Length: 307
Image (cartoon, rainbow, N blue to C red; front, side, top):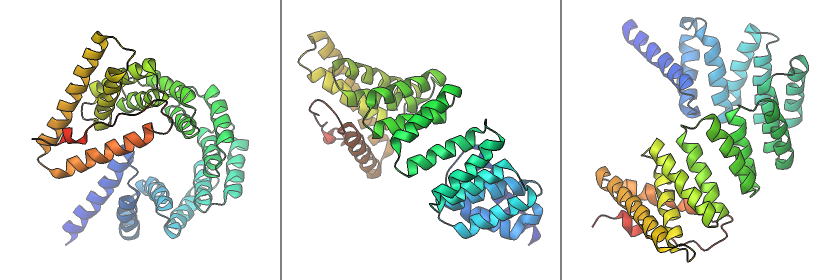
């Protein structure tokens, strides 16, 4: 019996560690495993207990489990009185309860003691975003990035804010910065391609196709980039401004993408993937339709169905 309990404890502890290391935000699972670990095995965890309290608290806030978040926070406060990190966690709990003014004061208190505390500055920006104050959030993020130009998370957040404001030129600039910082991230290439596609016009479409192709080169399983390559190449081929050589090349790219989509479906041997691909295409088109300045030619979904 003791051996079984030890195995269960070790598995649970290792799961939480792996999720932390991989930066997974699977909050419901973290709460399920973490709550049991804290309640049943806290004495066995040694110093690991403190990082687990923090991990479980953040997950509990995601799951609206304020009771559990409060328990974890009280334990951390007892162990680390006056810690800036624990103060930030207390601020995050106030945010989750929509007590934005109190949360902002908490972060101001942290910044008064340590003006270089980037986490507290970013939490203040997240409050502006939660309150729907996009213009203020954009201004604060731009000021922050003047000091911390290599912060990928902040550039990505700023690009999302610009996309929500339909300011695609500035969103593209943010994504260009991200690609310079991390040129091997396929998602940055794909998102840049989507923004260029949405901006419209032949030059942007060609850039869009190029970066969808780059995203696929970095990750050949990125189905969204594959659909993007198909759609951008199809639109270029259908554009009356292009010459016969460009048209022929883009028909070829679109045909290649069609073939890859077909292969992905056939290899799966499951109807489920087709539904996923249709949903992906639908969400992709929904994004593109926000401010496309030309008429979309919807691709024929039947290309996904093997004959």
